[in-house]
Amino acid sequence: MGVPRVAHDYANYRQLYHPEIADSKLLGSADTKQSCSVRSLHRVLFVAPVPGSHFVTRDSQVDTTRWYIVADSTLKQDVENYGQPNERVLPPDRGKRFIRRT
Image 1 (cartoon, one colour):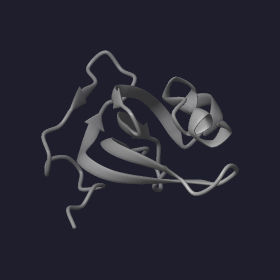
Image 2: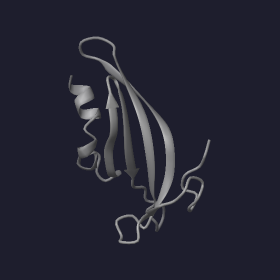
Image 3: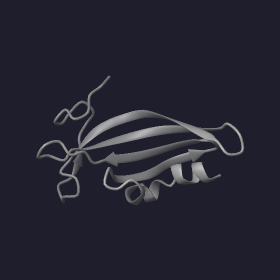
Image 4: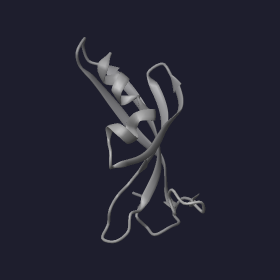
């Protein structure tokens, strides 16, 4: 069960996917469905926006060696002043528009 073990290791996403992932954590889990929070770090010219996203993922095993995982975004928000004492998560549809609703 190697693929799900790595894919669900949210506590270590920051180390596994450095420097793209700033933070992540598991929010809940039941059977083949997980809910997680991920903050990704993007560099755009002279700013480094950190969008926060919540995902629900579902695992499906194709055979003994192959899996696929579907992830649906359920919430996207800008994180203002990430890593600073005045860090705050902005309400949906607020911020510097690094996240767009589709």
